[in-house]
Image 1: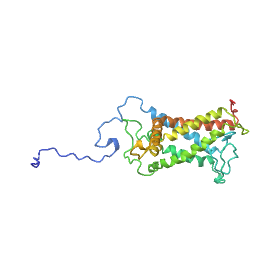
Image 2: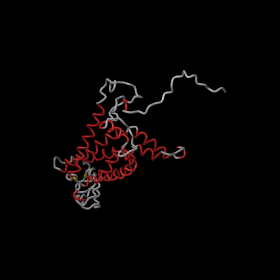
Image 3: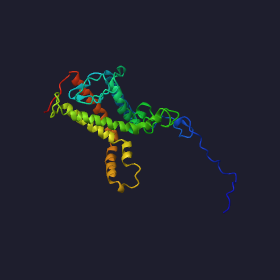
Image 4: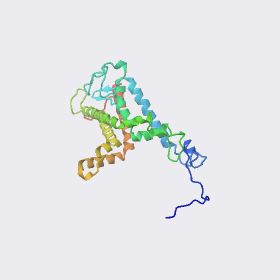
Amino acid sequence: MRPIVSTGTEPPAAHPRPARGGVRAPTRAAIAAGHLRTDRWWVPPATTAAGLFAFVVYSTWRAFADADYYAAPYVSPFYSPCLAQRCRPMHAGPNWDLFGGWWGISPAIIILVFPLGFRLTCYYYRKAYYRAFWAAPPACAVAEPHRTYTGEARFPLVLQNLHRYFFYAALLVAGVLTYDTVLAFRDPRYHWGHMGLGTVVFLVNIVLIWAYTLSCHSCRHIVGGRLKHFSQHPVRYRMWQFIGRLNARHMQLAWASLASVALADLYVYLLASGVFDDPRFF
């Protein structure tokens, strides 16, 4: 085979230069406009930002309120289980004095760390607040304002890898909320057979909480990941299929469960503050 001999007339080899300035790097297409889209691309990220901001404001207010979180037989999901000494006696739910007075901090702050950590590190919520608050990027085919991108390999975004561990904590939280929902079928005198509007609110909330938790990408991997032959694991395969169907609705379940848990807390607050009485069906 004859060697290839250079004649000196070939064009110089292209050596890609390192990208500087994000979409304005010299290796990118020189387009002066920030985007060429004509639709209202800013509506989805703006709506997402408004929704998340509203929940943050509401949950922060309720977490620091430290009041009106129990109306027999309902206990707010923000305050369950009760882990501080200052929690009022609640016969309708767990009341574990593990943290004593906790220096005057609301017990909700202790509880909300775990479901909040689970949602903050959730794959869907990452996409939502990256686009809505950090504009990274705000929408497809729209330039982001950041000059560099390091991914989730550095602090603080490297903490996103804790998602799988927050998932285990979320399972425990969902279990406690399930127990609270069962106890919602008791009347204020703790007799079984009660069903009020609050019972329905709690039922809807726990179904959405479980659906969102199980639709998690980490849960899907735990159930069916690292299997070479599904035929040898029929039970895990069926579970993986079920979770896969939930996972396809992960975004919708994330928003629905976020709204339902806030609604459940708001309902208990309105009952506890005496705004109205719980309508009873039987």
